[in-house]
Image (cartoon, rainbow, N blue to C red):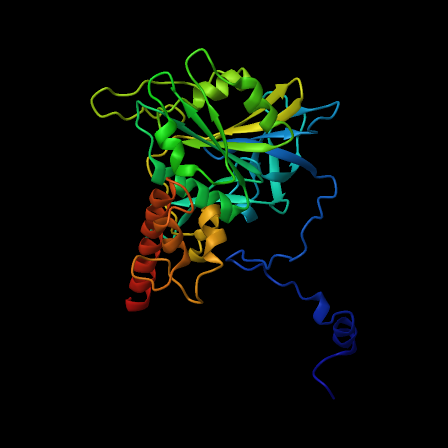
Length: 353
């Protein structure tokens, strides 16, 4: 005879393991699902500006309901840089009303990416702008003095990013830029000159139509002044220090502005002035491509030619010494060799380290 009566047996039959209540994990680390929302209602917007974790984006660009929206980034994008010119997928409140906030949940594939490093030995790159197809390099004929080698660095970065370079020389009423421009003779580089009261706004505007153009240059060369004249904006401008010859940093962040002219419209991206432009992120094989006149002659060089002063049978050196490439070729060859020597030293230190 069992010590359990029949009533107890019937109670046991009403319960099984599914009836047991599992206590919740005290650490509350419930495994997250890997399924993510599809965001099928996301809209594509252009990033116009970045300010302390908030992004100004343009929704329905060129459409009947075009509007500016303030947005933040999704958590999964916290390690991905979002810069001016990016095409972002945005969800949330996109009315653009005051106090509303959208959310960037992804980026469209970039067509180009302009970057720079702090110096040539720094492998950490800073993204300047995305999806630009033109770079307008602004230099002053004087006050501050133009730096041809800095312009060479801009050209290298532009060609490496697949961006077409343009050049504007301002303050030509203060000095003659002929000697400076001789440094770029033979390059596929369109040049504009500007003086006080004589800005070639129509010519520059025609080059901006249908393009996204990033303005770069040294501080104090008149970059923001030119942007204001083209777009009607009110970007802060400063003066050049008479003692140091340096311009004052007036633009603290990059901003996208729309240019509208008789021939059409385009986008202008004004960037803060810089006094150096590192190329630590650039493949040394792409440096020669920025010197288009020298690159054509380089095809005649022997295999493995370094194009440095001690390179034997270098066709570029022979062409420059014979005067075949014009009077400005010697300065351009010197600039090329300086860049190649810098990259050679960087590569040597990497191998030794």
